[in-house]
Image (cartoon, rainbow over all chains, first blue to last red; front, side):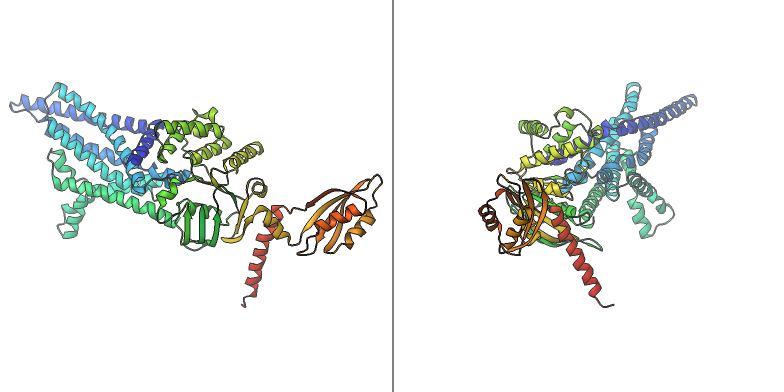
Length: 255
Length: 328
């Protein structure tokens, strides 16, 4: 796994020497900052009204503010994740550096895990920005930190699954735009798959809504560590990385 | 060091490499020669475990490319046609990354980086971004990358493509100096390059092996009969060219005598021997015994270019003839 770490470090540094990482971080910080600002304003307003109307028990910061905000994070991620993964293999294929990786004494799996891990780390950096915003809540309010941690774990797992799928799609083409657009399409589709379950209850509808990448975040965002949902994400990660490995191998047989 | 046996590579619709076999001994420099699209790159990619063979066996240093690719990769340095560089990395950073990938660590890694930078004369661009380097420097960084882990086998795909003449010479010198420690296969379609750098040649055309031999033998083989360049000078007097020609013609085994160049005191002839006859000794004796000076006597080396055209051309002709022979 030393090799995976070497690849991971190289990927991370190429995110950070190019404008990619800074662009994503800035975009995310601005958009999430806006979400946070409006949600906080709404929350403050609502709690003021409640006090005026004489209700004594206060609104719950975790339930009313943090939870919807973190769910918004997964929506923003939907846009950013394709931008993180699209270059992973597509660029190596275009510039021919894939030949260097493929002829070095490194296993395919180590390459894949290294790249996926780097993508995960960049995503984790994005999440740090949300934590900066939430830090204000801890300074001026008294939210519970345990459900927050569970929610973060859920977000990381969800992103992990989408990043694995994005990594796979990136192996299919030399063109980064195509890789990014296709990843976005697939991610969006997986996001809204759960809608089927709202009007249908047949087996296939239940299968489809089970596959919805968003439905499984529900429990995490409430601060509940549900093994069923964790298993879903982890198996999606494995599935995505497995497909990547197959695709890399077939690349050799085909090209 | 490298054994290739009945190697075949099929793509969906085409056969890129068709049953070629050759061996490369330790420390040799082998030129891999063929026109564009002959299957050179495909063969190299198979040797480096980038592509799997469809058929046949390939072993490098005793390891099969399909069975033990990791062992093969450890022993191979590979420079693809376009140097596999990351534009956004600095030279040093890049060499460090590649070195680590190849399993080098710590002081050994730093030592090798210094060594290859020196060797490939890229010391002055070690802190520059690879994307900003000129083609020549990129090529040399690519070469540095290939030798960083001191591999037994070096595989270079058109290492001098796109370089200026000075850089080409430097690169060739570098490659020659690497032989001995390393077994080198280099592909090219530039013929003088092979004549200058390589001991062995493997010529392929349209995926088939056309010839594999030493440069010298190949030239001899394509020539068929021996032909010799002979420079004769008159002793103290002007040379009677007609007389010399006549005398030479009389020697058994001589097919034809052509006067190439004539000067006051000496003349250059090209003498075609009949197939299988060795006439050099007889020529020398005849010249000296007739009282002339023998200034030069050397085999008329056919340039590899002619050999190559002859070999690949005849192949093409044979194929064309075969195609015509098929009844419609």
